[in-house]
Amino acid sequence: MEAITSEPGRNRVRSERPLPLAKVLLVDDHALFAQGLAGLMQQEALAASVTTVRSVESAADLLAHQDDFELVLLDIALQGETGLALLPRLASYREAPPVVIISSSEDENTVRAARAAGASGFLAKSAGRSALVSMVRAVIRGDGYFPGGLVPLPPDLPLTPRQMDVLLLLAQGFPNKRICQSLSLTEHTVKTHLKAIFTQLGVHNRTECVSLARARGWL
Image (cartoon, rainbow, N blue to C red; front, side, top):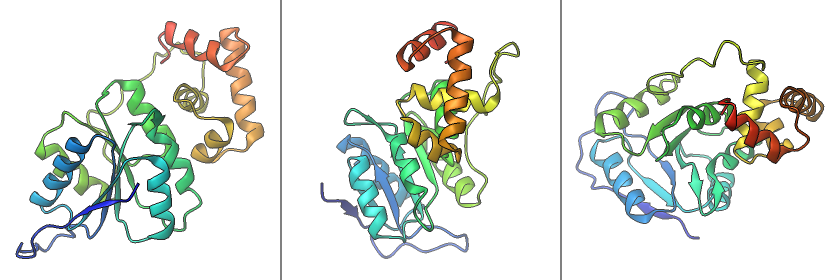
């Protein structure tokens, strides 16, 4: 689908800070929310131009042909697919912009999955203006933005931190290849981690693994 680009008026006075960003890409398939967020980015002088697309495919195609986007805001649930699927595809780009996940789901596991996939930040759709401004400023400084931090995993969890990263991406529907790309691991290493996770749970396939991990409170 063709991208929708929104341009603000040109009479806004620029501040000395490195804002507004020249170009921001917003990936969201809810038109009203996308229009509202794009407008808010411009009202708060966070972006001079916001381009909106509705799918991972459209976003990947746009980023492959335009390398001047300075930030990507990515909904985690897009037309039946996970927005996180975009992150592994950016690994092959020479200078991929930072990606911040925006989501109506604020649970700890969604935040962990976003972080494990390589996102630079996470912003709940229920957040207000001040949180939006804080997020953009933090991310462009390179600090990242994960409000409230992450609740530590249970100390008796029989998985290593890296195995947990693999499990979180598995639960998001990532195939092995994309888990490899997201975590910068070889396919052999990912398979080794999956085997260890399956052994801990006593399961034989991915569906059983995710279901039992949820039942045990690991996800």
